[in-house]
Image (cartoon, rainbow, N blue to C red):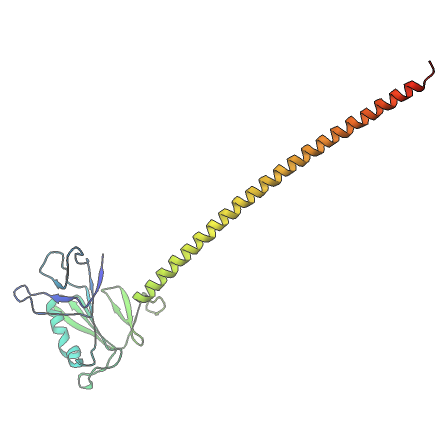
Length: 227
């Protein structure tokens, strides 16, 4: 699994472990081990892979470094791709700045700057497009399928979880309503049966009463017949 790490020190020289650089963000594939504290990524150690992509945001206080010296250390580190982003335009004019995006890519044994300007620019490291103004990443060259930020992804996950809970609540209420409807239907069936039984009993009682009256009249008529 990949890992996006912030401010993780990158070290690549075992003979001089203090030599290195601290990318603002690094994409590491596979992810470094999580069962140990990892203040530094030491690429000579097992499980410490060289970042596939490193990202630097130009500093207001050290813009010359980000435009002039940065790529040499990343080239020495073995990083596959480097982005130097300058969304606030701190780059010095004497070095061609400011430009929103610089992209450096490893080509065999060289580390070449392949983009110096605005976006979009394609990144082989993440198989996506990088844009400026504002800085964003998309899956397509048209800029429509935008990657979510961490905050947006967390918000979307929360909204999805809330929607799932709401759907579960609605489903439970629907199940309760269905059970209640079944209960009401059974109660109506019971009442209907009782009403039918009562009607049947009333019809029998009416018939018995009619037969009793007929028998009584027959007895009264018999008394009136001459003997």
